[in-house]
Image 1 (cartoon, one colour):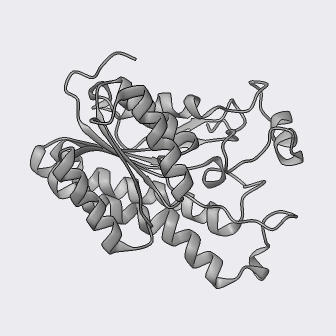
Image 2 (image 1 turned 180 degrees about the horizontal axis):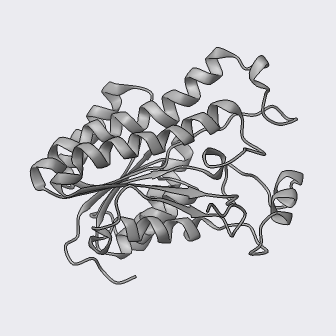
Image 3 (image 1 turned 45 degrees about the vertical axis):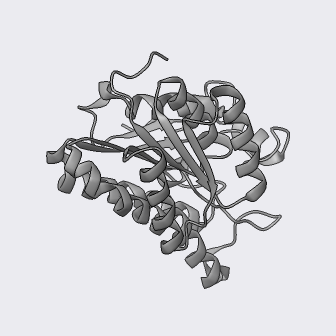
Length: 258
């Protein structure tokens, strides 16, 4: 990817593995400064080492932050503004999808603690990140907000449980609100909805779930994190200034809406 004309500061939640980390590499290659965070200490350390080796330590931050804790989110974004600059790009990728060994629980058996925790990470955490960046984006008259949704939020979920599917579907509603309220200030908001992508969250390609998913994908393969990161990087670029309020499916043809 060629460098963006005016590099910005980008923040990626859930940015230390899978799609988030692939996006960090893409945006750093495009010339942006990038801050990533997640809750896992080991993944933060590993991502920090990989990014430092590829790009040097000056253009990125990797931090351990619990997205369920508003003070921690506020402190992290304060550090980003101080050390890298005010974010012009926000990629909300953090997400959890708890399941039993047999698969997701039925709604009738779903513990309220699980429901609340998934929405706290996947939806409320996204809103908190938006609150942290939107005032400065509005002042700059520029911003790119990208939510990582899911195929499970677009059509009948085959693998995901109720809490995950609901949280991902709700992101499109939040995106539409941002389009209405912040579009006049040069801020775009879009959703990327991946299908089955091989990440630490989705497990081995040889698992029964992934083998069954592969049979449903016309492209004949499971997705890779960089398949999604490439779309996110475009939406984060200045070239995507007239793409606003879109939901872009990245699923190899498994779901093709009319």
